[in-house]
Amino acid sequence: MSEFVVSGRFQARGGFQAFRKTVEAPNENVARERVYSQVGSQHGLKRRQIELDEIEAVEEVSAA
Image (cartoon, rainbow, N blue to C red; front, side):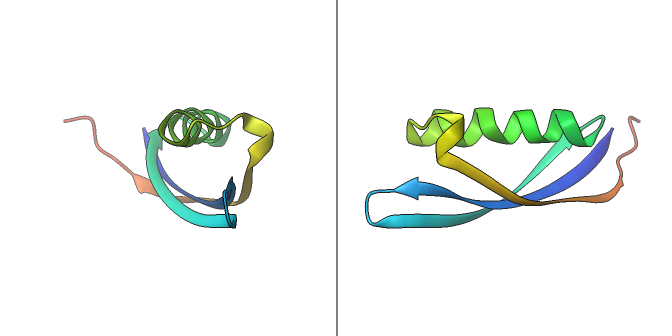
């Protein structure tokens, strides 16, 4: 699996709050879905309230 760093912002009470998360995923699309799921769950948000700015692959993670 690869590791991805996803940065973006979400709608908070006083405006937008920036965030940066690192997730393990097989590809960029799965990483995007995991971040939507995690941030939405933690802050009680819908996907349309979360904006992803950048998804960057970090490196391969060995399965050993």
